[in-house]
Image (cartoon, rainbow, N blue to C red):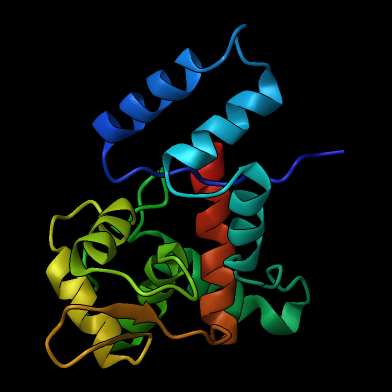
Length: 184
């Protein structure tokens, strides 16, 4: 039986280390596995590991498996063509020239943004940077807002991912990218 994988991210590794040192010092013996999971979760703002896990599970995007019938062969070829824009870690390497390829390539970036949470611009930028390697997170943030996948307040101080099911083709692409990122 395979265990689910939950990505872990800290905006400030120094604050993470300070929190872990402080929590560890409060223990009379070295922490066990579950205690360490709780300490890590608390260090990034969760109550405990269960709270972290519940949040991670609620932000997962349900995506379908690639079609296997011959009728859907064109979809599989399109997904393979779109995958050429992503590196081995599942990061977008370049912004596609064709508009028809740009929209589907936004969805793997969208899937990395925390769901149902108000975010500062810095937090959104960090999530986007994790999903791209060509160095233009501002372009991607702007495109996500324009495509109505991400909303922002008029002053740009608060961002929020707009929850929606990806279109079928984008769903296949997200699945392939997430599998690629897990393997790497």
